[in-house]
Every structure is written in structure tokens, then in C-alpha cells.
Length: 599
View 1 (cartoon, one colour):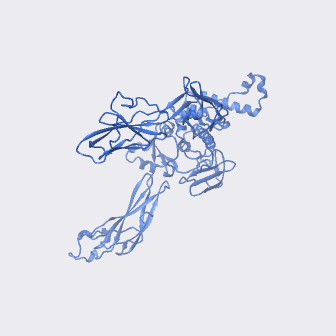
View 2: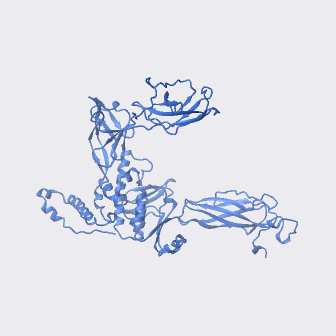
View 3: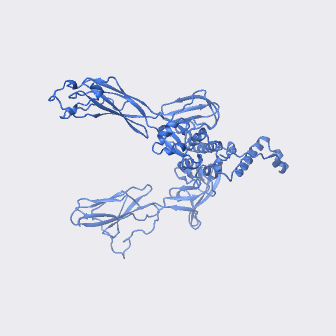
């Protein structure tokens, strides 16, 4: 891994600047010099993989976002100078229909549906064909249904005749029953006939491109300077694709007409956008070269600051914490990737990329607790972190935590040196891979965390040492069944207990069953009912077999990845003892005992 170490004397830079800069306080000069240092580091690292370059120093001096105030946006919704893109409703989908009583007349009917809003009409849906209809629709009507479209006022129905689509009616419902009582206009010379629309004239929203290339996280309020109307994010508009404002509703209700234009100058008292270097540099370095903003669009990487998961913050505060978390994530990754590829560093990098909680600061653990839904870890002089159960932590009160340390347990790395037995098990079918397999063991407790999958792919292909084959795995649970006796009498209450361990301490699901015998050779029912079939320990009242024999009981154990059967053969005394049987007393096929019990 690359680690730049230039030793530029920045004092010479200051000496070449005007004397005005002599008045800059020393502590502020240090901040500026930190930016210069990272710039030189990045230039030094250009011939290398940027993911290996220490570029995160300057992030100490930013919260991860930039806050703008009182920005004006002159938005023209229609007219010659329109600067918004119109988005339109789609035609209705999932059209279905049926005839009340299909008949032998085999009349074919066709229908198409369009949707209408205050502006116009969509293009028509695909054609619905109803066959086996009758010529008399009044006694045998056709029913057509479709899915509702949010924001649509009503629907037009066209059709009836095969391959001829004339206007039939308009409805506010999402179904129409055609009983033939509504006459269609099939004279194409008359107004209103043959009126399938040929263009989409609806408007679902107005998309305004923000006048810079910033990655906007939120613009909470837009205030109309001319109309005085106040629009609220999430109700009247949304930030779309990080670079657009999507306006909903009819602009005439919140803008004004000027000549042929409907327009308004909106003032945004407050807005947040992401630090540009996160998408322009860091996310690309971590493996998303083509669309780094997808990390934001996908809401990858949950901040585990206490209160985030329980909705304790306003939306504006949430976006601030989110940007700050992405900044810390970028710092943590560049920090660990600039070091040598030790197991610890490779593990930390994978944990960060896979969305595990980590500490923003160094300190001592003040407290560790859970409330039944979440784990909490409090760091002295720092933050309290909150992450969901079943994630667990190995930290205790008094534990020392370094900045960027992973706070939760459940991920470990293995190779043939550190864990030869595990690697041998993983490569059983491909033993030649034993020497170059890097095993990444994950507990089921770590599944489902928000993360960005392309970063995981890049980790496997480019961030691990060359020549290693990454194998992600979860080992199956293991164990045996303990029973209170080698032999039980017929009709006894038998106790069966699973002695099960799971290598990753995963949450396990249990299911007991009596596998065999369920019926004797002559048809007697022998199946035993398990009293607590989903507990790790169960009891069952034994049935009476014709002769001494074993019963096969099974404990099925599952974690999120594995399904394991653990069996036990429990010997049960029957009506007749095997050693005293007579040939006409029972069928020999019922006498199943292991030879160890027949000596």
C-alpha cells in the first residue's frame, strides 16, 4: 500500500505571499498548510491506486457538508423561456378483464385505458382482449380493471369492437363494466370519435436542474419572492437525483404569470450539499468510478450516532449527520488503506465497507448497555453510538478505543497460516486453493447492514493483496443430542436435549421431529409427538413398538446460511423382547437394534 511522505517547507510559501498574510493567525495557517500537504500527497500518489493514498487529513476541518444560505432560483414553468423539464404520467398498467359468462358466440372485444390529470391525457395502455363474449353485453357484460395511479383524476375507456378503439366513457374508478348501454361514436367524421390520444399531455411534476454540480442533500424551504408562497420539501417538492428540484402540483397555485410565462423566484434560506471531494475523489478511490453519487442516492452507510435509528433528529439534522458520517467513513478508509495489508487492516477495511459501526474518536468506553432493541456504546469525551440488535460488541466499560475502531463483533479473517482447519474445510472440493484463500467469516448478525455493494466488489478484486482468492463464508452450527437413557421403556416420557454450538454465535432456529419408524410393518402407528418442537430441549411420550428397537429422532438447526440435521437413535423396549421372540409374535422387520445391544 502506498504512503506518501513529502517534506515540503511551507514557510517558504508564506514568504512569497504578500505581507497581508502575515496577519493570518498561526492556527489558521496550520489549517491552510494541512490542505497544501494533502494536495501534495495526492499529486505524489497520482501514478498509484488512489485508494492507497492518505488524503483524509483536511477532512478534520470540515463537517462533511457545506451549508448555503439565501440562494435564489429563478424558475420558469412554461412559456418560451421555460427552464424546467416536464415529467408525465405513464399509461395505466396491469389491465385485466373478464366476461361474466363466457359463451360459444366467441365475440372478441378490445379495450384500452388512458389516465387524465388537470393538464391532459396519457397515451393509451396496451390493448386488453376479451374473448368468448356474447353479442348481448347487457345480459353478459365485460368487466375491465386496472391499477390506480397516484395524482390522476380520472380514466377514459376506449374500445369495445375488435381492433377499433372509440371513446366509451370516463370514470373515477379503477374498473369499468361494459353492458353495452353506452353508445360509441364510430363515425370518424364526427368530433369526439376515434379519439385515442397520440401524445401524452399530462404533467406529473416539473424538474428543475440546480445551477451547479453540487450534491444537494436537502433544501428545506423555498420562499416565493413575488407571491410570498412558502413551499416545503417533502410536500411541495423533493430533491431528486441530488441535482434537481422536483416540483409537484399546479404551478399556478404557487407561481405567477408574466406575459406568457408562469414563473417565480424562489429563495432558499438554507440548504446543504455534500463536500465535493467525497464524490469526486474518495468514493471513486473506494471503487465507484462511474457513478459515485449512487452512494448517496442509495442511502448507503447508516450513521450510528445515538438517536439516528430512533428518529430523534429533524430531517435537516439527519442530512447533516449523514454527511458527517460519510466524511468519517472516508477518513477511516483512507487511513486503514494507507497501511500495510495486515489481517487487522484488511478486516477493518472490510468492516467499514460493509457498514459496520465504528468510532469517530479515540477514548475510553464509559458505558455499554442495551434496551432490548439496540446496543449502546458510550465513549468518554465523545459520542454515544447506537446499533441494532442482534449486532453485538465485545467492548466493556474501561476498554480503550482508537479512532476508527470497529465497535461491533462478527467479522474475522482467516488464511492457511492462522486457521488451517477452517481453510481446509473451505477448500475441501478445491484443495489447490488452500494456499491462497483469504476467508472472511461473517456472523449472520452482521447481515442486512446498509452498505454499497460495488465497494465490496472492489475490495475483493483490488484492495486485497494480489493472488488471494476471497471466500466469504459462515460456518454451520455443530453438536449432538443428549438423552437421559440408552434405553427407554415403552410409554416413557423421553427427554432429548440439543448440545449445539455455532462458530459465529449466530441466532439459531430449532425443529425436532420423529423420523422413523412412523408405522410398524403391520400398520400400527408409532409416530411420537414432540412437546416443544422448536426449543433446544424437548420431551416426547414414546409409543409402543412391537419389539425392542431404536427410534430415529432429528434436531434440525438453522442459521441464516446453513441447515444442519443432528440425529440420535434412541432405543425403546417393545411389547416383546428381541431375545425371547417367537416367530409368530411379530414381524422380523420391526426388530431393528444395533448389534451392540444384541450381544
